Amino acid sequence: MNASTVSVTDTELNAFLDGELAPARRAEVELWLAAHPDAVMRLEHYLAQREALQRLFNPVLDEALPEGLQQAAQAPVRPGWWHRWPWQQVAAGLLLACVGAAGGWFARDHQAVAPLAVATVPLSRQAAVAHAVFSPDVKRPVEISAEHEDQLVTWLSKRLGTAVRPPHLEPLGFELIGGRLLPGSSGPVAQFMYHDASGQRLTLYVSTENASNRDTAFRFAQEGGVNVFYWIDGRFGYALSAGIPKDALARVATAVYDQLERR
Image (cartoon, rainbow, N blue to C red; front, top):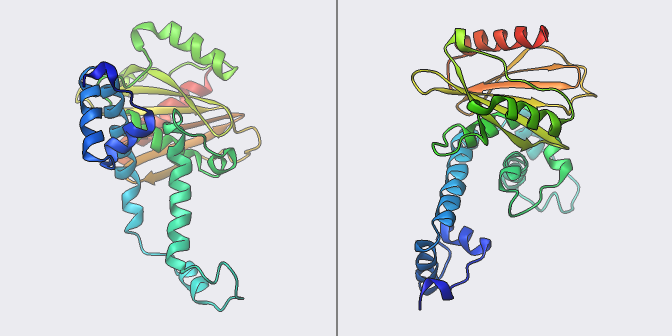
């Protein structure tokens, strides 16, 4: 048997990553991968996504359940399907649903995510997941590099239906790497990525899905190991994410906010 006679589906590639293939089939897939370096790169990308999501959300699994949830679980309820489910399973199911909604867009080549589920994920968490998935990528962290900033701006502005342009953060030590287009709750989202001299990366997540949101306060959130400053300005939602300390990120977020206000 040679690689040209082997056919491998995306489902099997995922099963290969999970170690779920039978030994004989695994050997065939390994033979096929040896002749398809592009597929190997896809597998590396899938693995990076999985590891990033685990780093971001695994700490949540170790958190104690809120007292209110524990009390609700211990309160008497009427017999029914809810009563038959142990409260630990219910809580775990809710957590997995939330994580799946946030991360599902990044596996969009393989399955669709219900729009209602994604819509329940806060702006800060969507931005943090996007940061955790793409900022560690060494080979292709962005789709269009800063060398072609004009093309990047034109492309993203066209896809979002409004003018978007990355702030310039060189005075703060951060240089633009480039950007990419991402799917949001109900439409496209832009992500701009920067790095400093040490290689530390931060991302600016720009959404246009906030027309009904009147909460314009400047807010801070910590999603796993990612710090996020986010705010709403008209129909735009902005979220600046990085692994740097809160005070350092606040200085950058203030500069971004000031630049966007002047436009």
